[in-house]
Amino acid sequence: MDALDLARWQFGVTTVYHFLFVPLTIGLGVFVAGLQTAWHRTGKEHYLRLTKFFGKLFLINFAMGVVTGIVQEFQFGMNWSEYSVFVGDVFGAPLALEALLAFFLESTFLGLWIFGWDRLPKRVHLATIWAAVIGSNLSAYFILAANAWMKHPVGYEVVDGRARMTDLWAVLTNPTATAQVPHVVAASFVVAGGFVLAVCGYHVLRERRDPDRTRPVRRGADMWRTPIRAALVMTAIAGAVVAVSGDTSAKLMYEQQPMKLAAAEGLTHDTAGAPFSPVPGVEIPMMLSLLSTNDPNAVVQGTEDLQKRLTQQFGPADYRPNMPVVFWSFRVMIVFGLATVGLAFLGLWLTRGRRRRNPRQVPSWLARAFLLALPLPTLAVVAGWLLSEIGRQPWTVQGELLTAASVSPGVGLGEVAVSLALFTALYGALALAEAVLIVRHVKTGPEPVAPARRPDAPSGVGGNTAADLQPTLMY
Image 1: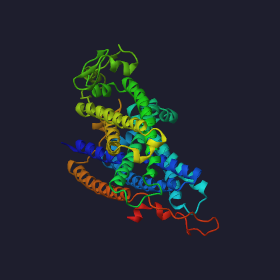
Image 2: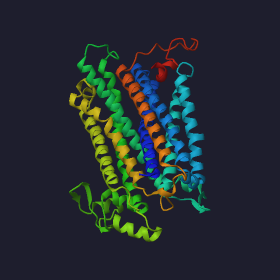
Image 3: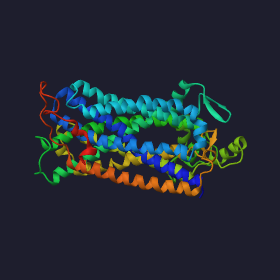
Image 4: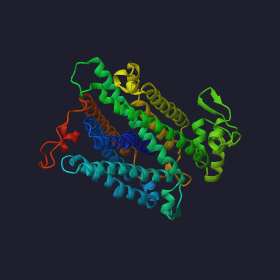
């Protein structure tokens, strides 16, 4: 093992860890904004309590995502300086837009939302959470546009060994980006929906074990009817978008990254009417060709034949990614994603009708199944990210820059080993802190809210104060 291998491990560990928080932040933010909108429109107390309850979970996750994202960026100068030199002129624009426009929009309005409960008019306060949510999604767009450029570089030219951007619009409207953004964002809503279902399932089961404990609202477990149904609908709709956008991404992969497609299917040689194998030993004839091109007789390139062609084009090297990781990541993504969406549709069917929507009527086995909605979609999106990034190897920029040529010169094995150990220990401590905060807050449940402040009362007298949404100070 050399410095390059450890640098790849370090970037993989920090990226995957950071990515654990990103999808939940994107999806849960919209969910919280929807709950507050319902409270704004109806004035019902349980919507406000749910807003504050899930809002704290959103803030804990958001804070952890910011911390891990900042640490991740250090590696570009530490271990990947040659990569930074090559892509810097291209990445400067989308990443500057992400920082100056999206992140500042998100963080500024999120601060106003946290501290504006008893200071801003109700309608203005509602607008702040929606502005923060828009900022989160814009941030995702710009980052994914930069990531898509590495898979399918457009709007650039290479001058003196560096990529120079010639068309910003081409970079931002890269077809790989326009397919990847809805796929990732929709997957984020599936993750958030699964998280909400798991929390609700826990409380439904808890109420059944201890029916005499203090009820969160007058109608007890009925409070969870709203988030359960909303999460089921969100997960089902988002799952459909994931499937459609995933089909588009597969067709682009056939054209732009045929080695990744071949590795994901384990196809070694060019095959007309290539079959699709959902699990080893089971093949659906011509399905891979149909999914990739809409033509069941189309030729799909195999890894061994591609290796020969790429060697002739770019010179001697191993252009195949880690085949087992790509192969199994693809299947974990599909199986766990389908299981989550299937659970959502099953839940919608079993909770149809007003009487069945009452959480007291939810079967205990279904409430326990909701607990599985926490790990399954998270594992699916992590597997999808591994498929996307490891499948691009050995390129950091497809067809332009090899990973072996991207590492910082002069960085030794010992230096990378020390930083990898420090980052791993730091992230382990952060993971423990995150788990403690979330578990403690989930167990506490939605807390009673103070009576609404009179319009003529001074700020901070009665009502819902900013302290209600400061989980890091509460614990």
